[in-house]
Length: 125
Image 1: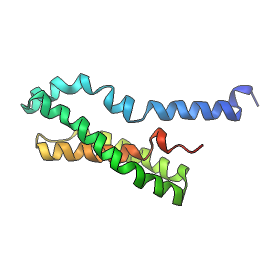
Image 2: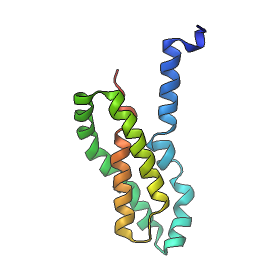
Image 3: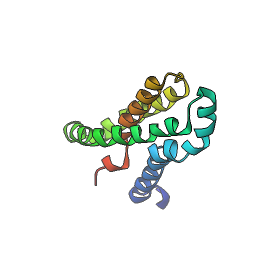
Image 4: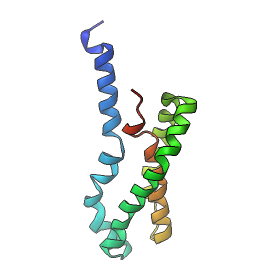
């Protein structure tokens, strides 16, 4: 077996991929690109659109302790693999969100909850 497929390199590759598809690169980093188009499309002020970042952070902060208990009970691998699927579905749901502000904020709250499951905080030692 090649040295590139050794256990440390495999773990490094898995962690890199996991970090690349997490909430920070998928939502927080690119949010600024979509701020003006979303506010223009929905006719909302930018502050109303930016509020979803607070909703996302609060939902994630509330979810972390709950998710960590679930991981302690059922194991990290199973929970985090399922969490990646849920997070991907929540990201896709953002694309079809309507101009209703309540639904918009609820969608981002769901995104924050599902983003807590496969987050780097939950990766075991």
